[in-house]
Amino acid sequence: MSREISQRELRNNSGKIMLELDEGKTFTVTRNGVPVGELSPLRRHRFISAEAAVELFRTAPCVDYWDLRADLDAVADQDPSPRA
Image 1 (spheres, rainbow, N blue to C red):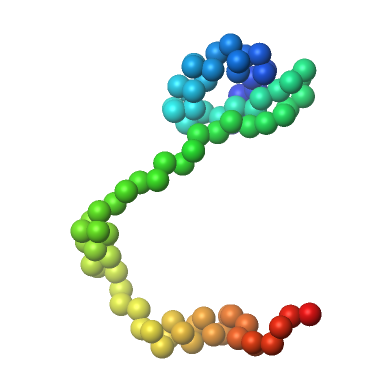
Image 2 (cartoon, rainbow, N blue to C red):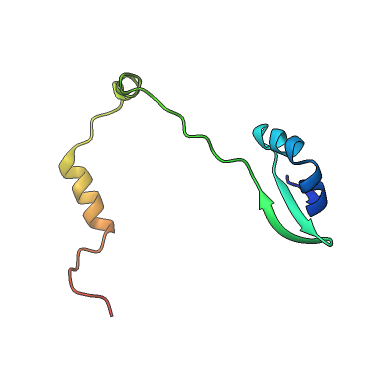
């Protein structure tokens, strides 16, 4: 749930607000009581090594190419003609 903060509070307490963003908190910024924007933390991209990825997928079931292709063909429109 986001907390409402005024433009003035954002200006005066930006350091504290940035720390709260680091903690995952979100904010709705208002000007004269009217919401004008949202501040939310960015999702951090996690790096995973190739070795870890291989290990994670080592126990995954095998995918049969032809079964996958048939499933995709069943749901995807394969008509090459241009759309109107």
